[in-house]
Amino acid sequence: MSKIQYSIVDVFSQGKYTGNQLAVFKLTGYIAEHEMQQIAKEINFSETTFVLFDTNINGYEIRIFTPNQEIPFAGHPALGTASVIQNEIVKESLDKLTLNFKAGKVPVLFDNPKEILWMQQNKPTFGRILDIDKVSDVLNIDKRHIEDRFPIQEVSTGLPVIVVPLKSLDAIKKVKINKDKYFQLIEGIDAKGIMVFSPETYHPENDLNVRDFAEFYGIPEDAATGSSNGCLASYLLKYRYFEKNEIKLRVEQGYEINRSSLLFLDAWEIDGEYNVYVGGRVEKIAHGEWFI
Image (cartoon, rainbow, N blue to C red; front, side, top):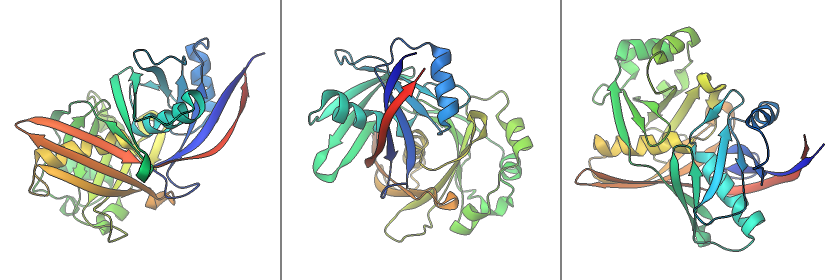
């Protein structure tokens, strides 16, 4: 029997036990893939990460597992894992480090005075546009609640998501995923998650309210999703949702499941080149040992 050190952190938190909880297992290069998957299943957070080695010559090698499967990239695991590496492996203040995911290298920047970590998103890709009637059936809402001035579209900055613009906070509250129609919708397309957003918010200081659903990955609804918000920022720029090519936004998420989260988006687009950063706070909750 051997043991692994791990830490639990809140990502995109507004205080302890808000945001999205993440377990980070440290220096696990000798653990088999099936053991990582089993640990993630037993932890049963939306994602669990594994830092394979303590070297940063070309970036830290990271694996991410949901309770159901490994995924190539996700946002809150990037920020949470970077925080643990800084505080518990490097043990000194950093300006930047690089995480190596299956989807590619992700730089994470430390804005220490504001205690915000920022991750740079991969160059976005824009996929197919989906039918409003089919999507409204999946969301269990009348299509009049969907903002038809903008398309429903697949977007990816590493992990693809279907972005759905809604008109109001009332529309956000009405969403209830029809699982059968959801699985029919995602069959044969890359995006397995659905993100809905509204310009109306619970708190006036915030700019958008979002909800994110990914039953395919074993996540009926996620409390805070950095990768999906990176896709959203790219979408907002592409369609000039705010009528400009630069955005600095506060995004609230998780309110419908009593896990209030706060994310920051800083993005701009010039001549077709996108620069997208997603930021948030990370707070340590606990640490311990896991026996395998």
